Amino acid sequence: MYNLGELLLLIFVLQSRCSLQQSNGSTDDVVFAWLPRSRLNSDIDLISTAEMSVLTPIYIFIRLYLDKMIDFFFSLYWEGKKKVIPDLEKKHAFLAESATSLAKKIKQKELKSEELVQALIERIKQVNPHLNAIAADRFEAALEEAREVDRLISEGLTEELSKKPFLGVPYTAKESQAVKGMPLTLGLWCRRNETATEDSEAVVRMRAAGAIIVASTNLPEMLIWQETRNPVYGMTTNPHHTGRSPGGSSGAEAALSSTYATPISLCSDIGGSTRMPAFYCGMFGHHPTAGTTNTKGCFYRNGDEDSMFCLGFISKHVEDLAPLTKIVAGDKADLLKLDRDVDIKKIKFYYVETSKDGHVSPLRPEMTDAMQSVVKKIQQDLNASPQSYYHDGLDYMYKLWCYWMSKEPGNYASMLNNGVGEMHGFRELFKKMFGLSKHCLFTIMQVLEKQLLPKPDEEWAENLTKSFKEDLFGKLGDNGVLLFPSAPHASPYNYSCYLRPYNFSYWSLVNVLKCPATQVPLGKNSQGLPIGIQVVAAPYNDALCLAVAKYLEKEFGGAIAACKVK
Image 1 (cartoon, rainbow, N blue to C red):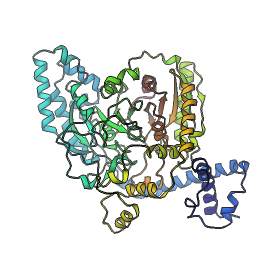
Image 2 (cartoon, rainbow, N blue to C red):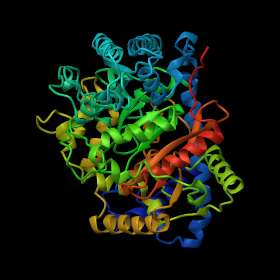
Image 3 (spheres, rainbow, N blue to C red):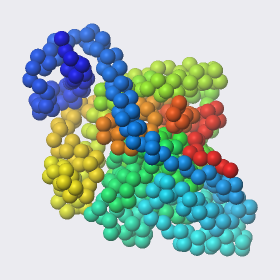
Image 4 (cartoon, helix red, strand yellow):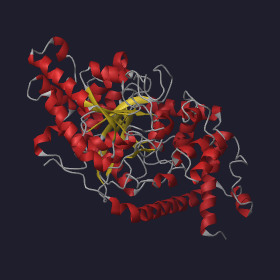
């Protein structure tokens, strides 16, 4: 008989073994070198598919139990650290409006840009001590630019000014966006004195659209993690519960949006970095079709790479997402068909109930209930019959993302040293043990994974990805959407992601598929934390995602702010 530890190990290995056989061709001895050489190893080969079907529910139960235990132990510390976010003052209630509405008021002289920018600055100063979201500000420069907008409008709204969709509206952007004269550290200690010498292409386009940048915001070291923390600026917290993660890498943007401290959040996404923070903080977030937004000047990009990396926005209002996406898409905006007139009653709906990826925690009941509530609502309101969908690629969400990350431009270990040599994982881990490393532990873990573990087989990964795309996009066509889970659970406690490092995989799979997706909030769980789902469409059908998001916004109450308007 097996003890509990052996049983859990056995089931986990069986899950992993299936993945590795597909991705590497065999269960590599290096991968399983840490396993005890006992009857446990030999028994793996004796278990049949039928027996596996019995063991899988046991594995899921144990994983759910372990997740609950992790939450319990972390709660003992973080529940005592929860801070209450100040409510928005009535005199600044306009900060709760959409950016589209604010721009209209400015053009119609119902609101001055300077008044709006000053109110936003005051709000940032009010909430930032609780969040630590701001990396650097340009408050005085922003006020000067706002006064200039007001002066031009007072002289008469010209045709040129009227065409600027966000004239006089302030915004914030993740610090990885180059803003001339502002820090550009990417959260790396070795870049702590670096400043941008020119604006990124996205910042140039936002300025041309009339928007005014007021601050750059915090991010995880080198952008890739489920929390927003680095050695330069420290950690950003979730305004719904300051003992929990706001997500990454745009966690600071989502935290500000959720507290009425920014009307526009310019983000980027290579593994869920726009949608994850939107989910954790109760906001909407749109990830456009890959290759349609110009990434020049952001995260070492020159703008013409074939990449999963894409710019996006987080917002409290769906109506802002299409016009904002048009700005960063520029001359490629027409490809996204954002002005398409969508009849939601004619959309084909599919949905995914869960994934069988053994790297990822099982979905908690609150997440499956959220999906079912949407399915039932669509059945009732639209007289539609959403169809359940599954593909074998869902069993390997994390492995597929790992493979395609290996195809991204740049040498990760070298970028972590600002191009001066490469970081050595074990050496950096040894330094970390004695407090000598200037890197976060999660960064060191990622380097060790890349340097030690075998890469997924190229032929397997590319064939499975191709099959997945052909099957899914063939079903969706130009008039279908996939309702897709966001994550196994709501926002995790700070630092607990170390014990569940792969739970971002529901978001990262969308990056693998290079298709659009909109994160949609659907209310709160029993702990008062936001939950939601993703709406996915075939490439260049962003309008479908946003149309369904708009419908769900109306039916489920919209964005979930972390505080009230007095």
